Length: 316
Ligand code: GLY
Image (cartoon, protein in one colour):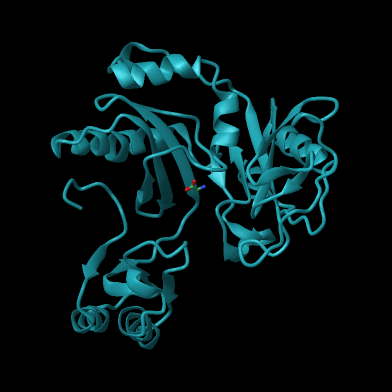
């Protein structure tokens, strides 16, 4: 807000009465009411009318539905549009975006079900055209890095921009000071430059003189999750179909997220268990190859989405 970087219109409140007054003055619905603290991704309520928004304020701030994270709330404009993840390298002065990607955050096909840490990704994101990339560079990426510097805390490393392409232009949904998961599983396989050299340039402040090159190919990652994730799930299920992390026949890479060895047997040990990534000349082929490889892997209760990449393919 201070630096005019486009994001949803919002206000923060520590007082339930002031929050309720803001809700009563609001004319635009849906309205988003969030606990202003860590709530395991659950502390966000999308309210269709004034009564629902007032109830949300009460349940978060007075009834403490999400615990202590509800001592402050954010009330925010509801944005619509395709989401894009853009990871970037920055040395505190120069910002170099990586190839764009698209996460699939909901647990079930068709973007239904609960929010998760990410059920799959594709890159590049077809909604992120060169024109939109240019707008994001001028209105979001450069102003963010300049703002961090102006605040006396220049950021060096990987800066994650979670964006929504709204009818009013691209807006920031979230920043993360890390790589994205499972975005990284499709972004880094497309990086042709030496990652270590790029990281050193980000550290040494020489990013402007460093080539950061991505291949023109596409990548898709399908996450294999434990049944029940993101709610209750069981662990310790033996995983079949993997040999040394590489699938027979090659062509796909399997990233371990929630696995363990029990008596030398590979077993599940988390909600998101594996990410299966394939790279190909077209997005269609990358998606087909990722699913082809994922089909070879099994464990009891395995849950995955069957439509990773479909929205992107339709957009293409
Ligand atoms: N995939 C979302 C994130 O890493 O935050």
